[in-house]
Image (cartoon, rainbow, N blue to C red; front, side):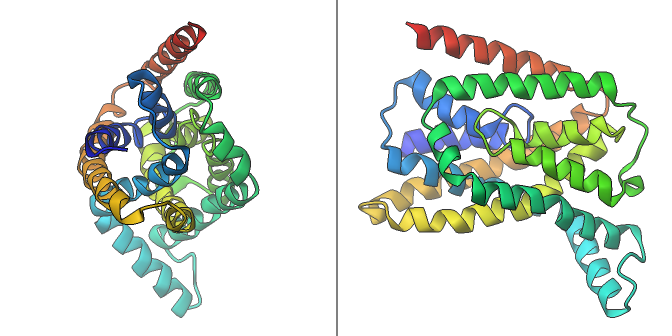
Length: 272
């Protein structure tokens, strides 16, 4: 992998991590479209570690919210009243929502890594993302705000996040749709989705360090990782800001149309 490739993939990661169109899917599709022959032992570690750049972006963007949640969470435990206020409850809900994806990631790790090598599988999973986005708009009533959600809402959103382990199923798309299915407003569902991405991306990044240590000539690969990390972080921050404003007035269906178009395009290209 060259620095130019890492830069382009970093941009793609930054845009698609938070937009509901699947960052993992685009990181599989981009090398296929551009004809890049990237070593298989570099693809998965790079894809996971470059997410650390977008992880930093979401932490910086929501640092005030995170600080309030952490303070309330700790204060609730100390005062033996863990559900004292909205921020404390949100902290517990984020933990609950994270559990399904952590278990799913550990159990399905080998299957997921194989899926990352298949552009056809990615194209099919993009259709799954499109289905989730469109169906949630028809079913959801968009009348519930973030402070009104329950632990059951959080757990169900967590199960939707399990689907995003596979490339082509958007993490933000599946979790936002999971919230909208339960009548949560789009922008509130997106905010919860972004916050709950923090422990998942952090855990995935830590686990990927094991794979990173097995890469030959690791010293030569580090500059590539740094380029991808910085680029994805900057672009990711801008993407969060744009999407939250967009969802105030627009439906998720526009992203579904894009996923369907890209899936069909990839299947056609792959057939030749």
